[in-house]
Each structure stands twice: as structure tokens, then as C-alpha cells.
Length: 321
Ligand SMILES: NC(=O)C1=CN([C@@H]2O[C@H](COP(=O)(O)OP(=O)(O)OC[C@H]3O[C@@H](n4cnc5c(N)ncnc54)[C@H](O)[C@@H]3O)[C@@H](O)[C@H]2O)C=CC1
Ligand SMILES: O=C([O-])CC(=O)C(=O)O
Image (cartoon, helix red, strand yellow):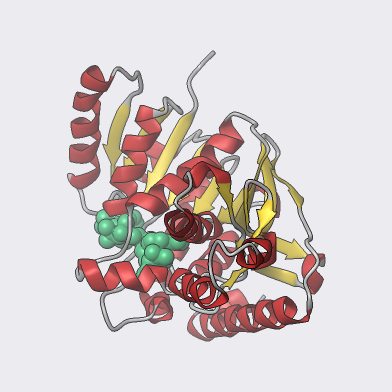
């Protein structure tokens, strides 16, 4: 059977890490695309030269011409700019929206049948714009954020409880901003919900609240430490989990920014919700029930995303249709 083809649009910090992980997991042959000519070629060659040491078989190539992504099964988009300390993700709208227009056109022309994962920030608005520019069907394009935000929450919880990260589940829904919604009631250790663990004395409500807040600000914490860019190892690992679920038809249930058409009372926006990713792309949206507090947090986050969409429409009139 022929190998799958994975196209990475953007060969920066996340793009390079994606290529390496795709190789290590033998997900398929990888094409790195970037406007910075030489960078995708150099990273591709470097990773190919690591393959004999780690023992994986995959081809790596670099390009600055969209023709190279033709026939890709999966496209992962990280093209654009990351924020620096003092900036919010939303400050990236102007520049990254223009990038999404170019990328969307490239995908529409050369890889219209791919399953597309957008990572570029501000995520919920960029994946919405990328869908408009590419014309992809709603089940073939998703945004990566919830897997990352949930992984951060899981890490903090596992560290607090001194248990394996594997036994901690978490769902962080809503938009990928500081008002994202870590759902404490739906997060567990070996199936036991967090509120029960507070009752059992495993942690205190104050500590749990602090971990929720740290999760919400998790991206900014790393930006402030790195100073020159943002997180890339955990974001790349998260997108690879989504790509793997599609390519291997694993049907994993993952929190992702998915196009909603009525679910959660939302129509026409990409919002972080649990979805099933399989060979059919977004195969199902899991609608969890919210209590009044959770609903208020979710609505607040959705309103932030709506504000970003309006800002995009203000920048590019073609998006108003
Ligand atoms: N959704 C999420 O959870 C996360 C999103 N991000 C976002 O991902 C994006 C990428 O982050 P990094 O890889 O760290 O940035 P980076 O700066 O290392 O890489 C971005 C790459 O995009 C390339 N690029 C710029 N314009 C392009 C265009 N028109 N076509 C093709 N390539 C183009 C640049 O040359 C650069 O190599 C940022 O917007 C960042 O905010 C970062 C972490 C998590
Ligand atoms: O915070 C940022 O700018 C990058 C990002 O989205 C994250 O790491 O969650």
C-alpha cells in the first residue's frame, strides 16, 4: 500500500517538530512548505538524515511552490507568525489572516481532498477563515487547540496527584483564548471526576482553581519564558494525534475546533468541542450537557470568538459572505 502524504504548510518551530514526529511515527511521506526558501528543504534533509539512526522509513522534501502539496492526504497549517511577550493571540489577526488567504488558495488548488488541521493563531478565527478561503467541506477541516489545552491541564493534574499522565483525562472546550473552558466535572483520574477527588482530599478546591487558571494562561506562560516565540513541542504532538486518528481511522474522541451547524446552539462558527476523528474526517460531534456555570463560561468564550470573526470580516470584506 502506498504511503500517505502529509503536507506541512509552515516549516518553523511547530512545522519542523511535526515533520520529525510524523517520521518517528511513520505516518507517511512528508512535504514541508514555507515561503522562507531553504528552510523547508534544510529541515527535511536534516530529519531524513536522522531516520537511519531512529530506524524509520519516510521521505522528506521541502518546497516553496504549492504544487508540491498536490495529492496530500493531510495538510497541517502553521504558516504565519507567533506572538511575543506582551501580545495576545488576537494581535496576530491582521498578518495571519493574509497568510490564511494564500494558504487557503494553495490548498483549494492543489490539495482539495485533504484533511486539514489548522494551528495558526488566533486559532478559532484562522480555521474559520481558512475554511472560507479553501472552500473545504466542514468535515475536512479542524483547528488544533483543545488537545493541547487539555494536555496542559492533564500535566498539571498528574503532577499534583503524582499519578501517571495516562490515567488523567481532561476536556478543555470553547475558544483557544484565556477564557477557554476547562471542564472540571468531565475531567477524571481513572474515571473519577475531579470534584470527587477534592471530596476525597486528593487536592483542595483552591489548588484545583489555580490549575484551571494556569491552563487558561498556559500559552502565555510559555511565551513569557521563551521570549522569542511560543510553544511548539506540545502543539506539534497534539496535531499529530489528530492526524494519526484520521490516517489510521482510530476514531479518537478529541477536543478540537470544529465547524458547528446547530450543535451547542451554534451555527457557522468553529468552536472547541469533543469530536470523533476517523477516516471520514469529523465523523461526529459529542454534545455534552453543561450546568449553568459551565454554560456561562462557554457562552463567554464563544462570544470572544464571535468578536474575532467580526474583526476578520472588517479586515477582509470577502469574508462577509
Ligand atoms: N493552535 C494552537 O494551539 C497553537 C498555535 N500556535 C500558532 O502557530 C503558528 C506557528 O507557530 P511557530 O511554528 O512557532 O512559528 P514560526 O515563526 O516558528 O513558524 C512559522 C512559519 O511560517 C512561515 N510563513 C509565514 N508566512 C507564510 C506563508 N504565507 N506561507 C507559508 N509559510 C509562511 C514562516 O516563514 C515560518 O517559518 C503561530 O501563529 C502560533 O501562534 C502556536 C502554538 C499553539
Ligand atoms: O500562546 C500562544 O501564543 C501559542 C498558543 O496558542 C499556545 O501555546 O497555546
